[in-house]
Length: 388
Ligand code: COA
Image 1 (tube, rainbow, N blue to C red):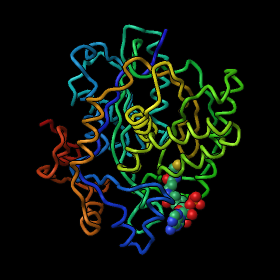
Image 2 (cartoon, helix red, strand yellow; image 1 turned 120 degrees about the vertical axis):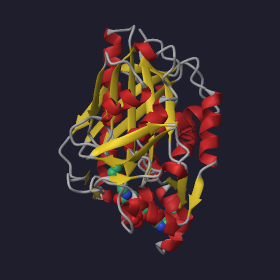
Image 3 (cartoon, protein in one colour; image 1 turned 180 degrees about the vertical axis):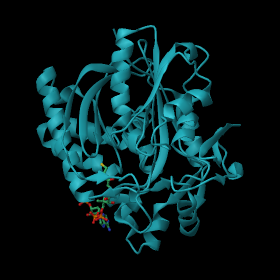
């Protein structure tokens, strides 16, 4: 039985910061950001978007009249959740009007949460092939103004339906995992921005990639050359390239060229959006599906997921007959193109005013936000959401 990703939805807010502008403001050479970091633009959330609303705006694209009644598992992967107790999945269920006969919960392990959800969903659907699972990864990546991590911020959400008739990507039954207690990136309970040892994190990421891809090939008795493309968790796109470069010497020149070409396809969207934390690997997958010139159904691709702290996982996917979806691509390209550019002053104001958990009761005016689902404020310590 094939189990895997049926449809993928993506949402990012309608504001961005051009990283050339940020470079000038921070007295850096723009090429450090464009080439050295591998990012061009960064999505900036208005006060009316948070992890819940972005998840709903992505999930509404994949919940249909046909699958609505089959969805009985809702998993919300995030590391920027809105409540220390109640899960984002319950808000999502309510906002989308999903049926109540469902398991709905949130998963946290830094940027790994959506992969944990996808793997759980795969096993659930394998055991119950008539059901569908909804898995989302939704986050606002905040490192702080004038920090080294500032250039690797961003925000957005990915939503995936997982089914026994996947039209996009069948997921391998097995994967290789590796975890260890690593202080490379964390966010204490009372912090609104992440703490990160960036260079250390880069090293651990590459080590976990090598460990898990090598273990996968050995355990599943496959060769590196079986993968037509490799996709990566991309907190910033240069990091995936660094990991890819570590294994290039193990294949011949034509395979190297093919992987490098597919890697470029896999970072087109990420370069425009920035870091989605949990959704980053799956935005990169979408980017590959929408921009590759060579891939065809039946091709195997490798996926490397990483969540600081740290958890790594490598698994494989087989492209299904309908993996190319031109409507989806046109919608994403239009959404990215139609965003409003903020100057650095406006971005800093958006950043400072974005309601963190420290915000008490407040009213948010969503007038400047074009999204279907918006956050409208906090009343009696209860977050208020609206569908328009
Ligand atoms: N033109 C081209 N490249 C340039 C450049 C220029 N003018 N100036 C610098 N660079 C390159 C550097 O050589 C370096 O490339 P390399 O990594 O291949 O060696 C890159 O730009 C970054 O420069 P660096 O000096 O290392 O930047 P930094 O000290 O400001 O830190 C990060 C960069 C990525 C470590 C930092 O932004 C960070 O910590 N981000 C968060 C990372 C994260 O989230 N990790 C956890 C999740 S996995």
